[in-house]
Amino acid sequence: MKEFELTAEPREDVGKGASRRLRRTGKVPGILYGVDKEAVSITLDHDDVTHHLEQEAFYSHILTLKLGKEKQKVVLKDLQRHPFKPRILHIDLQRVSETEKLTMRIPLHFINEGKCIGVKTGGGVISHIMTEIEVSCLPKDLPEYIEVDMAEVVLNQTIHLGDLKLPQGVESYVLVHGGDPFQSVVSVHIPKIVVEEEEVVAAEGLVEEGVVPAVTEEAVEEGEESSDKDKTSGKDKSSGKDKSDKDK
Image (tube, rainbow, N blue to C red; front, side, top):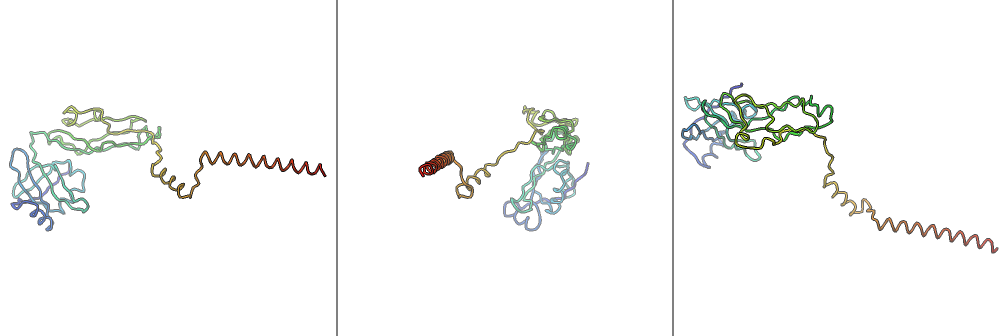
């Protein structure tokens, strides 16, 4: 497993104003808590944190935090990002104990999708309902990700939460606490063609603007009546002509 190390400094100045000043200098305010120890306010380098966050494994690994001369094992528990700027606003780190179970969100990796029977022979598409699950385990058993093998999944089949094969020592937090094992994780089905409401509205708008003439039942009936009159009128004219010729 890849190892990640973060360097932090304790901070005494707390509050919104202090946090804003830290961010202007390229720092990220944070907090360290857990394992029955007092919470500590810390500061980390923004660029260093951002670099680590680019790697998926960082979110589910046991991290090494260097705080002063002490090194501690921690996990990332919460992260606050700026709503539209590429900036980290705050970070929460939790200490871990080798003898206490952790609760972490672990990503799902869907493998063999190109070999999926439901796709290759059934013409289906794969729909990912979940992309991660919450697990409970000791730090030594914490997985980087959970694999979901799609090779043998047939058309109209759904893999449920209770179907997932978890590594030894790892439990689904939801199922342990009485959750529904039939929650859908991924499925293979035939894609449905849906006429978007916007398209229907656009078509109606064109009709109202006169771009596309609206054809109604009344218009059809009027057309049929007009056609019948023309036919009748033609016959009358023809008959009148014939009669006139005979009179002559």
